[in-house]
Structure formats: structure tokens, C-alpha cells
Length: 95
Image (cartoon, rainbow, N blue to C red; front, side, top):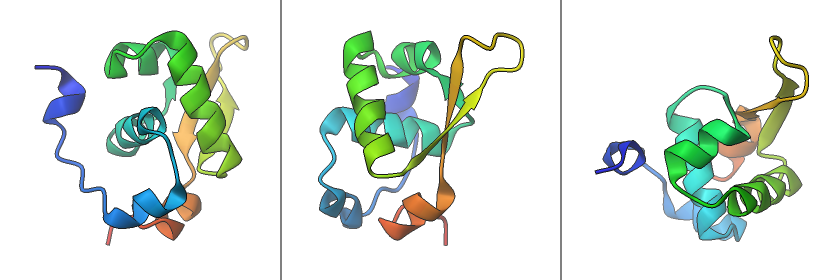
């Protein structure tokens, strides 16, 4: 069984109100349960096609749920991290 399926991340119904596609929700769960990741890491963790992960990241950025940072070792790569204020506003924040 894949690692992301074993994660016990509670995602309340408020997340559905954000009108996110399933791929975006899957990426958001992975980022919420772990640390910041590159797109390549997200493709490996979610087992989604790279184009699907790009689309999911685009939708999450539109909802202002992500922070993009440049990777220190390789400035060509972007690291994606959850913006906690955005996540709390849709009900994903830890209580």
C-alpha cells in the first residue's frame, strides 16, 4: 500500500467547500502531513502524472493555500509548502 494511503490525516468536510479537484486535495493532504516538497517529490508520493500534479499545484496556488520557495541547493527547483493561514481558513488547521 502506498505511503500516502496510510497517512491518518483528518480532512474535514469544510475542504469540499473550497471546490478543489481530487488531485489538489491529494497533494494538499501530502503537504499537510509532511514537510515542504518539490514537484518531483509530490509526483512520487501521490503516484499522479506530473501534469496532474502541476494542475493541482496551480489550483492550490489560486486558492492561496501554498507558499513557493526556491530550493537552496538547486535554484531551478521550487519547493511547495502549505500556507497555514489558508489551510486553517478551509478547516484543515490543527486544533
